[in-house]
Amino acid sequence: MYSLIIVEDEDDSRRGLVDYIPWTSLGFQPIADFANGASALSFLSDNSPDVLLTDIMMPEMDGITLIEKARKLRPDMIPVVLSGYSDFEYARRCISLGVREYILKPARLDEIKDIFSRIYSELGSKDNKTNKTPVVELVKEMQSYIRQNLQTVSLKSLSDKFSLNQYYISEIFHQHSGVSFQEYTATERMNEAVALLSSSDLSISAISEKVGYTSPSSFSRSFREKNGMTPKEYREKLYVR
Image (cartoon, rainbow, N blue to C red; front, side, top):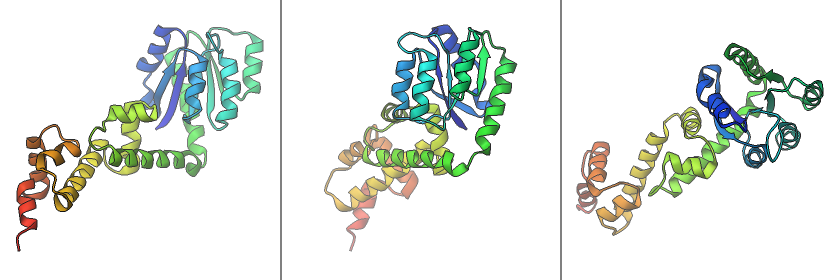
């Protein structure tokens, strides 16, 4: 699954691009969308999507300027233009900036599918190590964040922390961890609970809260399902001589 950001100043058009194009079936996931080039450029300073799909005429920063600046930040990113203007000068500048496709509005669904099928093939032909290593490192950062924030971590907090769509986080996390975000978090919470039961004098209620359970009863239930005994029984067993 390749990542995509969409930049379009018209709200209805942007929502249509995000929600009604079957991106997943085309091998893409929109991870962010913006109403102007300035916001998109700010996002690109910290993130590396595979494809940029942008309009040309927008407030604050037009699409041509965005692509020009984005190419310096993310030279491997593939830019695609979707515009209502067929002006030759626009097309010439786009070509000079390495734009792969110049799609005229109103674009047909089959045209967008065809174009992104070609882009998918192009991305797939690149060196996998170049494309995937940054994602692997990102997932490792997410895992570290989860371990350090067991009490409050959620998909939303990961989304806020890394400025990425929750669906995209779920996809890459499962792909590169071999387990879902929920499974990984549950395992880390249980590991930390076992460590605290073994090495601290904290109450079971305090441990439950510290590792992110909503109540001591849900903690005890989960602990028993995982370990075959309640937290109290586990702690008592530790001190049986």
